[in-house]
Image 1 (cartoon, helix red, strand yellow):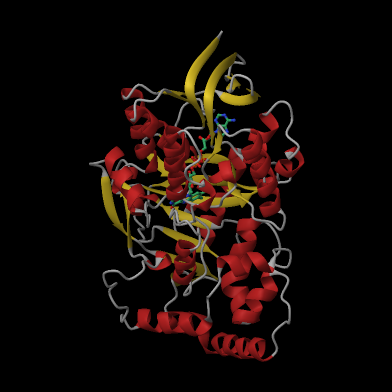
Image 2 (cartoon, rainbow, N blue to C red):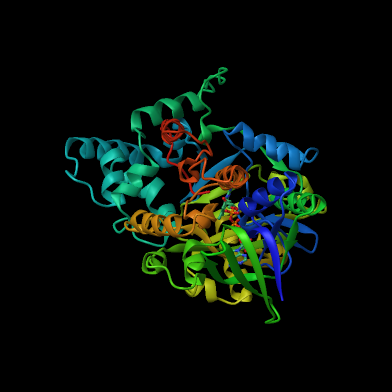
Length: 500
Ligand SMILES: Cc1cc2nc3c(=O)[nH]c(=O)nc-3n(C[C@H](O)[C@H](O)[C@H](O)COP(=O)(O)OP(=O)(O)OC[C@H]3O[C@@H](n4cnc5c(N)ncnc54)[C@H](O)[C@@H]3O)c2cc1C
């Protein structure tokens, strides 16, 4: 027996639930199928372990898009808190404010290294590599070899699992465009002297310099659980434990047939007029029968995966950071989250702390396949080495593996996505791709939501009024599709953009 629905949504993450919430609010018939057997929220879920709450990476709620902020307030009107933001870099036993403060950086690096940094910068400017091909060469040209090795190399290699010599210069140019050392030094000096001017009304918001952010008091999962409940109250269906693995379209009737498999192996069939997919492009295309021509392109898309080890410790040692970037090459951990600083409600009592150690990896590699026991042992050893807590104080731990946390922007991804998009848009006007992995866009919740918001408008209008591919990384939709992106790039002048 098959179930019919007007719109079927694949995935109950921010994109899928935004679409379902808005469609049901407009009285439209919608069903969401989510593979996870127990939770909504996707990568923006909040995990609960013996009363301790933690995110898959901390999730800041910040958007330049008023429409997104309004929707957050509509879905979760009473549960946002405003949190101060503090993050630092840990390198060779020392902490550096992030964004950098000049005097502190000089003090920490010492006269000798600081002088070498300036000398290597001057050398790079005097003798630039003519056509920089790799990330390494590009950054070396901008900052010099020394600063590259301290503030760029190790963290970038941990995140992407590739040597900076193998990452393309285009990627660096795209992510840290406009960054120049002069501006970085000016800002770092002002920060040291406490001279950073307050933002004036109308001035563009500088994303990396935001000093506070909003956060649901019990984590981002709270937002998405509320969205699922409200969708259900409006007549929509959010069904867990259903992994979509087969799709076919009948042009004569305009009907999609979708099959889903449950954890116990049971199969279900759904039919729908519109299909909204936030599933990874690679998986979506693989599920379509007959096979699209661009299957090869979809299969070439790469992902970076992520393991977080939450350590719960009875520790009196407190630190104010929300998170700390671990640039130090002597440990594998890439970042440490301090969940009490995100919200006191993430920790059930005063005596304990919960830190999330983040390891970037590839599905199937040594970290991914290590047993939970080994990962906890590694995390305890490394947290002791960094000195944030004493490993003997750890009383409990939890390991979460997140596949496809990051869509990889390698040299061929843009062409591959373009081929898939061209074919799907041409052959299937009622198939709508939304969200992060759904569009292979390495962006935040607000972007995922905006693509879903515009898709709902398209479905209600009955034609493709908006081109969702024009939503930029700041969740802004512009006809030209670039003005917001340019603001964003300008705003990243002072410091390289860190991975979210
Ligand atoms: C470490 C880290 C930190 C981050 N920090 C921030 C931050 O501070 N602020 C911020 O705004 N964003 C942050 N993000 C980004 C944010 O997590 C994503 O942008 C957002 O979750 C994307 O939403 P989505 O709905 O597109 O995708 P997802 O969250 O990936 O949700 C997709 C859902 O679809 C389901 N699904 C997939 N395939 C199928 C299938 N075949 N059948 C059924 N269900 C399926 C998945 O199980 C999942 O639930 C961070 C991400 C990471 C990895």
